[in-house]
Image 1: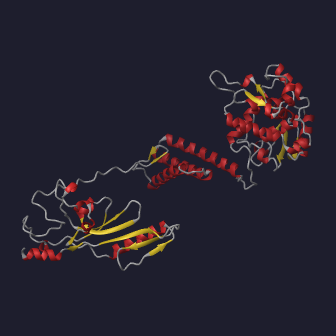
Image 2: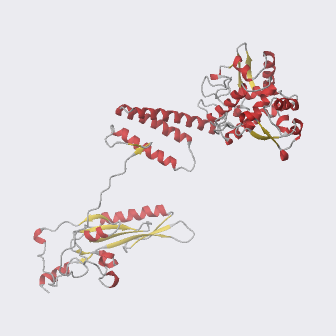
Image 3: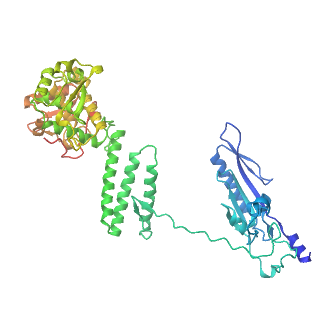
Length: 512
């Protein structure tokens, strides 16, 4: 061996290597311990895996900052670990080509997928590139031309920067450059956000909103207040986007977002009982505007299709409609009729069956005698779905049940029963519950209910109407009631405010 070869062999040293580990501190505890392979580093304990992982990463970074630059004359530290690039060419591990280290020496950092250990090794850049997940933290300075040893011929006994002598032959082809993929396109509401969109603040806002909406969809529980805020931000951002791009569909999307924000905000207020005017909490039985509109649609339907005159017939037809609205059929027991306050329920049921509006398998007396264990099936032919499956109402089975329960709650109110309120009074209570603002004041914007409209929903003359209003006041249903020649004004009491269905617009009311 030549003197130069001996000198080079003496100069080469094994690469440095140190490992930081994260292990459980003991059974039955969430505590963890962080240890380092450097003898001078003391073991530390932490209360949780997250805290331990942060401490381990910080410890490794401190080592990397304090460590000197990689040494150009060091051998690969991964050789001692038996890495796949340095496995011997025997048995099943025979390579198609001999491995040759190369490139500058670097400090490479690797970790396992579970985040249980982190390792820094001093190796050649070629081995670092061949190690899955390795990241280069530092690179050795390139040697000057005068310091580079003269190349030796193969087989002259001079050690090379590798774990073994390399047989003569061509140098393996370099690794192919990784394929660079385009970053994913930023989207919001199925729209691609252009990279060239300006101002940049608008593009950043749209990207952030898209991420927030996607995160909201992954929530286990809805947050209507948060959703309303997001929709309001979306409406503002899309309006600005439409202004700078001139795309009309963006402006339409902004309007839809405004409507969605208003609906979510109102639904949140009704579910939580938080009023927009800082008024009292109102946990309503029917919680959303759609349910309120369906309740008014049933009242409007019954107004023009009751086959018999009078408030008693109107109330009975209304309750039977709510029982059979989905399929035209339902079940009824005697208590359902006696709870309505009718003067002669058997005679009224007989008249409805006689005119063909109602169909019963037995007599009206049998219906009044029926109990929950042997309920009587009833049918209303006019409510049965048509051949195309459509019926007179736009709601389904679950909504029908909600509306029927709400109406039953109103007419069976404890104080209405105690004061022996008439069927007309209960019909008036049910009607007024759908004709208030959010605070419970009667009429659109609390201005009162017009008497000509009220007469179509509750068939009664002025004298009968005054008696009904007095009964509602006595039953703690209405307060500050004031009946004029044109309007009925007043306020629902706090006791019955949860049964109300606020008007969503000043001109919203059941049509005759």
